[in-house]
Image (cartoon, rainbow, N blue to C red; front, side, top):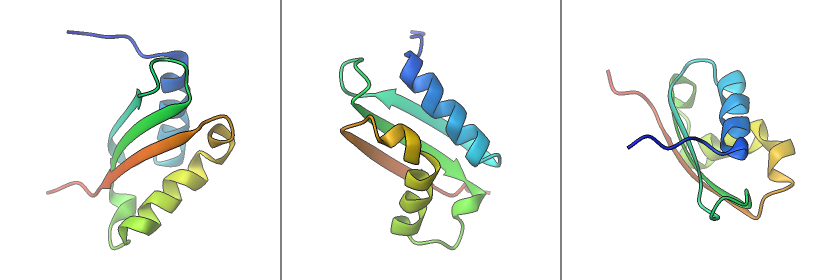
Length: 83
């Protein structure tokens, strides 16, 4: 079933696409019931290669530093594409 993204989900997705142009997958889900307070982010990118998980998450947090100001929290899942 197709569900449309919220305005917040679209904004966060757009920022991540700009900051991670080589990402092969980006999925942003508002897990706060639609109010935009908390998001789950799944992102797959070559840019994470040879970086520890904490470094990958820091990269995502840095990319979203302005958007994070209005959030209560993020749940981040990062990965490197499998070839």
